[in-house]
Image 1 (cartoon, rainbow, N blue to C red):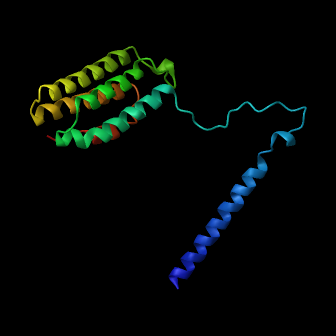
Image 2 (image 1 turned 90 degrees about the vertical axis):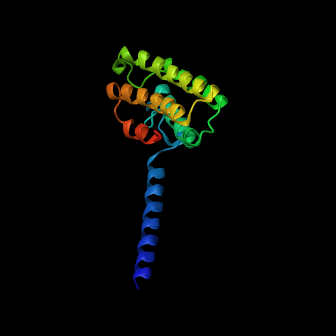
Length: 166
């Protein structure tokens, strides 16, 4: 009985979603339906478009998350760190969503982060202890947190979760 009621509710929701989508499509006229005396669409859809810096930062977080397990297991390679250094250096020249909100300290944090990645590379090259490698990996993330405390605090909890416990 409950399953039948849930199934009916589910079908009703799907039907409502279909009608809503159909209605939305009907509210957006095609080019042929727009009268000639009206202004052309501006191309803005009202949807958020991430700035190059936001895209770079999200990519950096994804990279660090994907390499977390390798850092923990001690299988992170010099090549992977070199790839991160090359890719993450883009943040130093990427445009921010609100350039006026970027403080002069951003450049210093960006450089410190890249230096931390170089240190991580060095710990792998010299086959340092697991603790030293994890300390270097976490130090890069600590630099991220420090910067985000000053510039954009939203991602701090995500960054903290990437850290590996020695």
